[in-house]
Every structure is written in C-alpha cells, then in structure tokens.
Image (cartoon, rainbow, N blue to C red; front, side):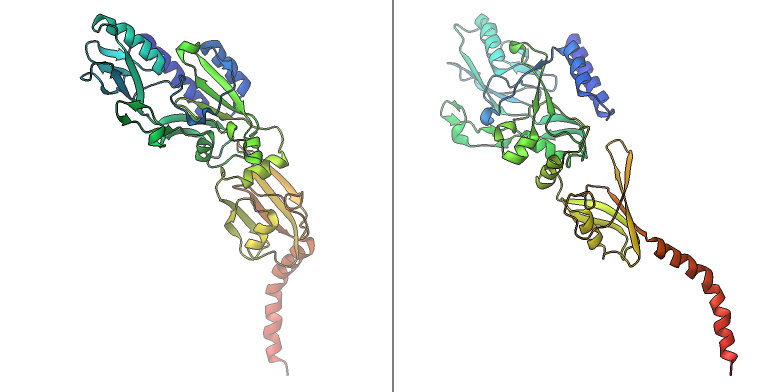
Length: 372
C-alpha cells in the first residue's frame, strides 16, 4: 500500500543513516552538502517552543493518534490511529495518507475531500497520543547510535478541548535528554557546535533544515532556550574539536550529561594496581591516591589516552604532589585512561641487583652454619 515514490525516499533516508552510523570519521560540512544536494537543506534557528506541540511544524507519522472532530457529526468524531503504512482509515473516504504531513495540511485536505459527502464540512483535529521519537546521535559521544524517547505527560488543563473533554498536554523530549543517552561526550567533542538536522514540513518548503546549538552555553550559563525540543527523525551530530579546550572539559565534567563515574587503569610501582572507578572530574593524583599511593623509589608516570578513533596519545608526567587539578602534571581523567607508575632508575637497578645476587647468597648462608 506504500506508493513507489515514497518507498524510494524512505530507502534513501535510511541508507544515509546507515552510512553515518558506521562511519565515525565524518565531516559535518560534507554531510551538509550531501543533504543540500538531495533534500534542500536550509540553515535555520530552531526555537525552544516552550513545549508547545500544537504548533504547525509537528509532522505526523505511524503510531500517532488523532482526535478528529466532524462538526455536527458526532458519529464520525472519534480517535483515529495512523497505521504502520502511514494511513488513516476514515469514514466515506476510507484510506487517507497522513504520514509526513502537519495537522494544518491534513485539516485543509480533509475539509476539501469531505465536500463530496458533507455540506460545508468543518473538521478540526488534535493529536491525542504521540508516537515515540526516534533520533540518531552521531559523532564524539561515548555511545552514539539510534535512540527512542517517549513524550511525557503534561498538565491536562492546558490541553486542547473537544466538547466537554480536556485533552492532556504532552512534553516533547529535549536535546539534553538525548545527549544523556549517549553516555557522555568524548574529551575531544566540540560541544559548542552541535548540529541538528530535521525534516521540514511540505507546506514550509519540504526537504531538511538544520541549526547549530552551543551546548557549552547551556551547561555554563543555563541558557534554557538552547535546550530545544527534539522531534522524530532528527539527526544530532557532535563534531570533533581540533583542540582540547580547558573550559569545555570542565563544563562537561561538572554537568550531568556525562555518567557520574569513570573507569581508569593504574599499574606499575603502586600498592594496588588494577582497574578503579572514580567520580567524574577526578584527577591523576586522586587516582594514584585511590590505589594506595606510590611505592618507594617510584619514578615518572606514563599517561596513555585513546581518542575517538582508537589512536593512543602517550606522554610522560613527572609526579608533583602539589600540582593543581587540571594542570599539566595533574590532568583531569576521562573514561579509559591508563596510568603506569614507573620505577626510578635507582629502584629499577636495585631490583636487578636483587634478582642476580639472591641465588649466590644462599650457599654462603648454608656454609655459615658449619662455622665454629
């Protein structure tokens, strides 16, 4: 029952989605150019819309339930669900393709179609129940992927009215909600330029629209207008930064988008080597203290960190008990960091001497038992 043209567009969109999901190295500008060539990508600024889902930019789809009111015809006025193929089954006209349209577009078409059956039809409709929101999260997140979020119930008294019945309002998922699903940003995420790509209603030109959100301002200054509502089919892209910005890393660690705990690995000349769990925002010295501290004759520290593509960045750090947090000698830690405490030159030399001389000491000790 799906028209051939619609099936083709559906395949193209999901082919793009698959390419994005399985290619972590992407260029957001190139992505924008591809969508622009095929889907009329337009740069816009999304509004926070104050959770108002009764605006004209909501695009209906399978799973939505519509309350359709035929003025003067109570027998027709009831709830209608959009089926898995995007159709409404309506009296007189039977199947009506609603998928991908806004409420005002559907209202206009239904009032036109029903002129054949009703004198001066007056049809109004509201959304009684919203389908889950499916969103793809791509880029410098600990767990990118495809996620589904549900709408939350709001205040019943604020919803639209149908006769004497008040309809419950619904609160859309927010940008912050989907970012938390990604289990935190990678240390090289550019959170000041998060890109959101969204379907545009046909009545507003169709194709795709995009905007860029500075989540750093949201975390630092509480700019709630940046915490926009997320809609079904959105793509959220977290690009990679060319450099680590101290202010950005601190904001990530202090916010609640990232998990409360991180796991790091400490080995070498310490009392209790192994995997440890620390609070988000912990530093190198705190990790060393958590495993009982260094043993005597400890030397420099090998510090190993993997980037988003599996490449290891290694540096040598001289231990400094007085180093400030997030300084060169006491960096903030992220998930998966590896810390190896090396022995000092003297400590390593002592170990070699001990291994070489121990077998020689034993015969002399035995011989001394026979001395007078």
